[in-house]
Image 1 (cartoon, rainbow, N blue to C red):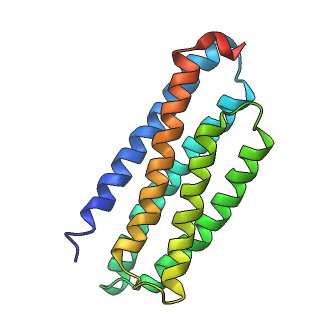
Image 2: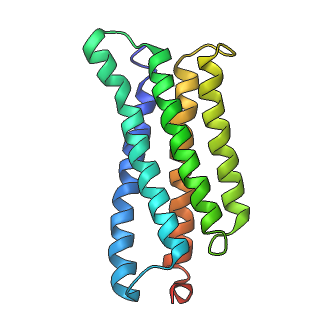
Length: 166
């Protein structure tokens, strides 16, 4: 069972890298242009929150293993599902508020991914699927994908097209 959790450590490492690159992007773009436009600020927040969330969600299972020697999937999936629900509502609301600064061809699929990952967690809680590593992994993987998309969009908009920042 512990060997299957190694993929979560890999996700945590990748998420740490994204959070680190976010700091570099902040330093480079913030000093070069004197500020952020609302779209890039929203992308930056999304990347930081999703990266840090993926790190915490990946490592939280190891705390369960240290304390009891086994993982209670139901409680961990419930915790992740409630977090994903709040995370999804916050960022979908942010997408709607910043829709003039963001492209809908990215924010709509990301919102659909958020709803799907959250619904999968709750489907496991009500018994439609078995709560296990696969279900939990889908929630954490969503956070990683969210971080990747936000990072790619931020680099594309902030670094490769600096004229759009002004």
